[in-house]
Length: 464
Image (cartoon, rainbow, N blue to C red):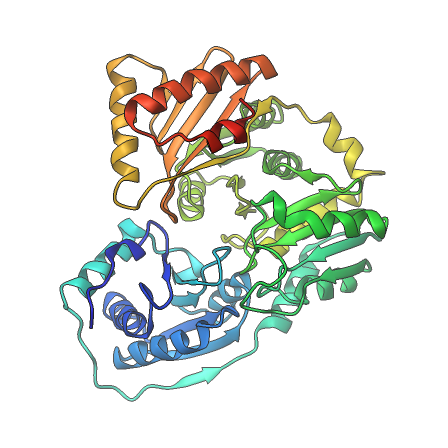
C-alpha cells in the first residue's frame, strides 16, 4: 500500500480525494483504528451519503469495524442529522458517517462521533487514530460480530414534527441539492400543514445541478427563481449531507448567515436568556444584537465541532457557525441539523406578514463575502503564524483564537487557515462602505508583507 496522506485527518473530520487520498484500504484502517480507540464500545452506528464512492467505502469501513470486534447498526443512505439521531435514538456510544458534506463529487470523508452523537475532533481522537494508522499500531480482535440494517428516518420525521409549531400555513420551496436530504424536509413540512415543493430532491452523487453548498451564493440561482415564480413565503437550500441550510426570502434574496444567526438568536432568547456562542467570522452587529436581547456572547474557533464544544462548555442555549452549522441547545439534541434549522426559521416566518420586511429591519454593517485565497495544506498554517507574529511585533489589536481577527476603530479584518481545504479564508467589515474599503486596502498590504498570496482576482472579489 502506498504512503497515507496525513492531511486527510483534519481538525474535526476526515476528508480527501477519492481514491487518491481516501480509498478502501485507508477506510478499512480507519474502521480498525476507531475500533481500537473505542475499546469498550461493542456496537457502532454507521451511515453514508449518496456519493458514488460511498458504497465501496462503506464495505471497507464495515470490514475494519468487524475485524476490530464491533457489532454494527447500518442506517444506510441518510442525511447526517438522521445518522446523529440514530446514535441517540438507539442509545449507542459511537458512530461513523461516510460523507464529504458540500465538497465536490471527487471527494469523500468520514465524520466520527461518540455517545450522544458528540463529535470526536483532532485533539480528542482523530489525531490519535491517525498516528495509530501511520505507525501501523492496529490490532484485530477475534470475535463473532453482527450487522443489522435499520430505517430510523420515520422516527426522525415524527420527532421533528412534534418539536415544531407553525403559526400559519406556509408555502415553501426547498432545494435539497441532489443530496442526502431527498424528500425528507418536504414530508415534514407537509405533515405540519404547509405547501412544499422540492427542487433536485433525487439524490445523485454527481451533484449535476449545482454545488451542494449553502455558503456558495451561485448555488441559490434556481431556488431564487422558483421562490419568485411560485410566490412562496421563503426558500431553503440544503447542503449535500443535510447539516446546513441557506435561506431565500419571498423576494428571492439570499439572506446572509449573519442575519440567519440573528433571527434564531432572538428566537432562542425569547424562550430563555443565557449564553450564546458564535465563531470568529461573524459581524459585529450580531454580537451587539445578541447582547441587546439579553444574551452573553462567547467566541469560538471556527469549525462546527469546536462551536459545539464551546456551547457545551458554556452551557449556551444557542450557537452557530457562519457557514450554517446551528445548535439549538435549549430545545433540541446537541448536534447540527439543517432540516431542524429550516423548521425553526419556518416558525419565525409563520409569525410575519413578509420575511423581507423583517430582514430589512435587522441591524447591519458593511461586510465582504468570505474570500478564499489558494494555498496548500502544508503552507497555510505557517503563513497565518507569520501574520500573527507580524501583528504582535507591531502591537496590533487582534484576536488569535483562530487565525487573526484584526480590530480597527471602525471595523475588523480576519485571515485564517481553512480546516477542510488548502485555502486561507478572509473576511472584512466596516461600519460604513468607506470604512470597509479603507480596512480592505490596509489589510491587503499587510497580507502581502507576510506572504499571503494576493492576486488580481482577490481585488476584483473585494471590488477594489
